[in-house]
Image (cartoon, rainbow, N blue to C red; front, side, top):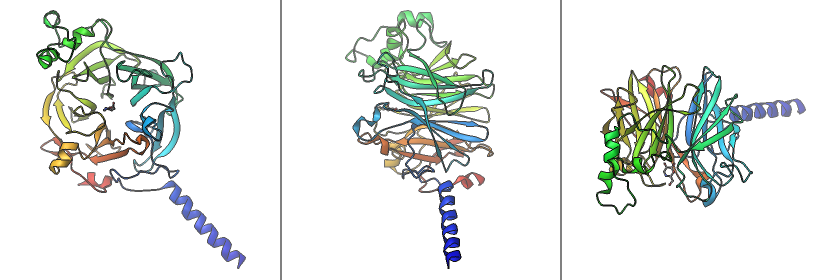
Length: 377
Ligand code: DGJ
């Protein structure tokens, strides 16, 4: 009897152990997504890095309640071998308790992205950083580095970008002819934006940088892509060789077109960018663009969503954050997006959808539940 009870306990124990390790083998967009400890994954505005055949997911660690969108903890990191089951690896970059640090607890830290520099063997994190108590006015990009992928990351600095440097696709003549925008009530506001009114305003002190992402190309050149000029224009900049600063090479993309949430991927030599419009935490129609060269020219292709009107207007109630290439599968990419919950940010959900292609043009369809076999077709 005792032996039988023992065996039963052993079996129950083994089963629960197994469940601890493998929670799911499907993606269920918009639903709670439990990590291997059984807690909803807390890594919003995420960025992904594949290293040693493992996926790492970096994201904003939110807290409960309306304050949850401020950085009270830092950047969380999770790891996974299969993209379904994620282990919490802790806090990769902690906010500071030192009132002299720009990264003080209570600042805003969004959309962290990490890349690995093969030459320096350092992991380099970039993120959108706003100073505590200053809303979204500072518009800085921040950098932190680590020798270990899961951290701890050492914060280096946050700054405006390219002070005193003109974009490669903006001439001195363009600059001279631009008129500085003082207020949104300026006449021909949009026209002035396109002609560089904000670029000229911020020329000396550096350009604004808000929603951002990073992309490492096949030749290991890395790029910083960010929403600048009051979110009206994207800037794409080449990073320095060590990935820890920006080079002087950058271009303006879609001036005046109001893009946020950029995410870039490359398929057979062609670059695609998904992004969103500009509606705060509320979703809006997604956007798709294509280029043969990451520094442009970029061509706008429209909304990649193929769903109901409501789904197309809201990108399936989500906003892009990253496109994840799937290990071991050719041309398999996952659109990773956030369904924000500003009233309780920690409860924000993740919307992951397979990227499908028709005539080599990417598109998205809703899936209630799906798995990686979708890429076998
Ligand atoms: C939309 C951005 O994409 C988010 O990262 C965040 O900055 C919100 N706006 C804030 O309203």
